[in-house]
Length: 224
Image 1 (cartoon, rainbow, N blue to C red):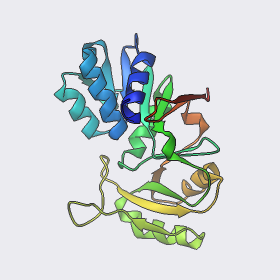
Image 2 (cartoon, helix red, strand yellow):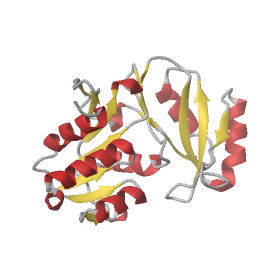
Image 3 (cartoon, rainbow, N blue to C red):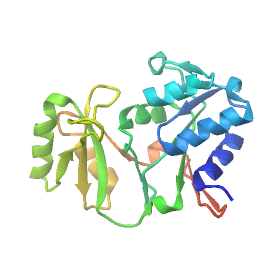
Image 4 (tube, one colour):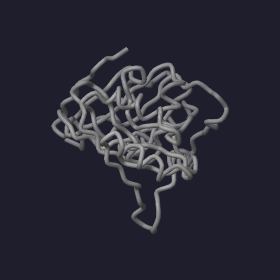
């Protein structure tokens, strides 16, 4: 039996068969999806819109045709992974720092499918929420969050000193949330000047969630 990520990649390949324009997210699971597309020899069946420069580069490396995210092309299906799923079926994303573009594609796509292992289910708080902020606002945002009882810190890179910079030239702040109602927190955060987007993905961004494990178990949750 292969890994859970390999199982999920095999599953999604069947789901997107016959589609022409495919949106792809970012992360380790998505690398497995791209590898499976290559192994199956169907890279030429799709045109791709990607949520990050990294994913664009990987698709181009294997001969895929990448459409610019600026083109406004609507993917027939958007496929992505997630970092955490709560028992309310709210997703937390943004570990790779691509949350704004991921949410943009999720909003634009006709169907949104998310892949993840059962180990990513988290039943209760606290939750670590990635927030993309305009660089000039970072200290203001951290102070504003502190005033409403939320501790947050600037995410720093591993391979260089300084903040993680998104593909949009923004910074990532990670906020510790001790509340189960993440969708209300998302709306509250968006009222803070300087916050561009949060990594909280509520039901309006989700059509299907697929969970898997290394034993071959698959569970599909339909939200649409």
